[in-house]
Image (cartoon, rainbow, N blue to C red):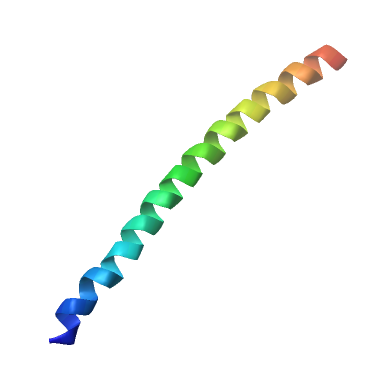
Length: 47
């Protein structure tokens, strides 16, 4: 009996962690690409 009540509560955090992780990954990728473009632009201006 308790397992049926516990299972949804253990499932929800995994879904939230997965969604949060996906958002963080997207933000990191976008910021990394943006930084890379800026670094290349600054590098070209310096030399």
